[in-house]
Image (cartoon, rainbow, N blue to C red; front, side, top):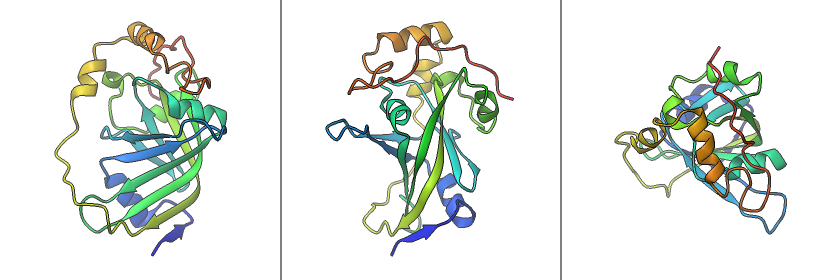
Amino acid sequence: MGKTYARIDGRLRTFIEEQHIFFTATAPLDGDGTVNLSPKGVSGSFAVLDERTVAYLDFAGSNAETVAHLRENGRITLMWCAFQGPPNIVRVHGRGEPVFRDDPRFPGLLGRFPVDPAPHGLRAIIVVTAELIRDTCGFAVPYMSYDEDRPLHARRFAREDDTSLGEYFGKKEHIATSIDGLPGLPLPLPVMPTAD
């Protein structure tokens, strides 16, 4: 049923890029730590950088568990499901790294995305290098239709500038420090650079 791929290209790449939502899973090294699973889905916020590297924009939210886990150990799994068309599930197991606003690579990476990140409170770009790429049947995944992106996230964070966004993050319990006490998003938030 399942197949292992050497690279993200061809039909596999097309499938990944056509999905409107994907999921990220990370965990701390501590076996008693909190496993994190997050949906991601703002159109244009995911990019295939090359046949083994993908990236997505990490937007404002009420915690930073993925960032914290990646800073500690780098382990991440990304998963896409076909909710329309032929059934399919694709997982990319790999090593991820949060690239923060003050990293010299940030502007160049930002230029790889077609979406305007300003309304969403962009705080990092997550870059993932694939170590294992697999698909499975997805026969039990139900049909669900995509209508449109929700406008709520952009409405909420579009009114923030770098200063107020940094203040927002500073007030949240699990932004600078994860649920399990790991270092999360480095604060104060650096100024947003422009894309190359």
